[in-house]
Amino acid sequence: NEQYDDVLICVADPAVRSKMVEVWSKKVVPFSSLVSPDVLLHGTVTLGKGCIICPGVKFTVDIQVGRFVIINLNSTVGHNVVMGDFCSLMPSVNISGNVTLGKRVFVGTGATIVQGITIGNDVIIGAGSVVLNDISEGQTVMGVPAKPK
Image (cartoon, rainbow, N blue to C red; front, top):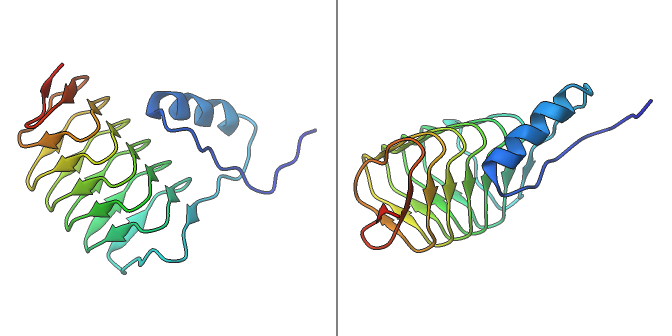
């Protein structure tokens, strides 16, 4: 019998991470979260289980982070953001206020999402992109402004 104290799944690809959680959940393992000690979590920020929040991340207020989300180095998350399960934010992502990210969204390094945007499930946003409009489920977008690939 395998025994585990804690399990972290540190895989950037949201779809792969989702499948790994499904497999490991069948083994009845305790999933942990890892939050860098320099991250300030206000009382109005909620984190689902299995999250990894790296150094330099800045949260404002009224933020809901789903399960098994990775927020990489020096990213910022504005007020009233809802982030679905298995999202991945690479380093230096900036998300303004009133943004909703669906499940399994991947946001590339240095991308910016302006206020009031809704991103569907299974979206990929390219590195350095600036998202000015809502993005439908399953799209890959890139550029300034971000457009479908």
